[in-house]
Image (cartoon, rainbow, N blue to C red; front, side):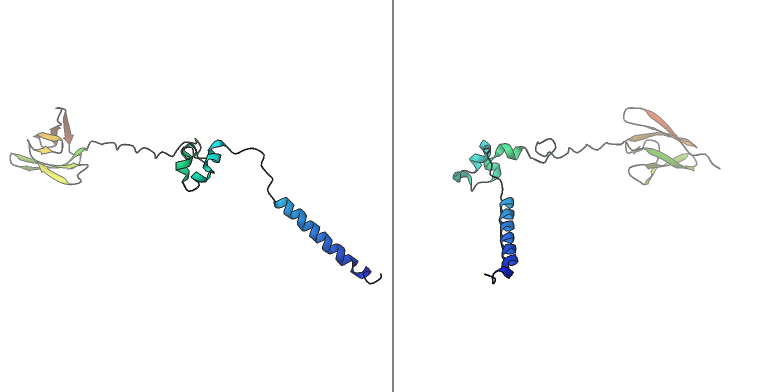
Length: 153
């Protein structure tokens, strides 16, 4: 009887380890659910629907995404229509040769210098008159605007 006494701590240690393992396995096992699944999920789990996609079997769930704030399908943002800016005209110089006057103008959206005389049309403007220091233009509606050379020597 004395032969098994020294082995007693090892036997108890083994038994304790086996018991701890069983408790851990029980803790990891999921708890059984008592509430039935929703009708849409039960319908999806039927053998006839197992091969189909989610959108075919659960249209109500597919149309209401879970993680979207409003729970509505994604809608792409609407693009704003570009604002059309009317081009402007600037007088940069006047060339005088006897009685002939040539105006040098720049249109903002074309980025180049135009040589114009009275009666010419530039972009949406009609050149009415060119004097020594001014150029008068009118638009399609008849509104006139006088452009003056910048001051200087």
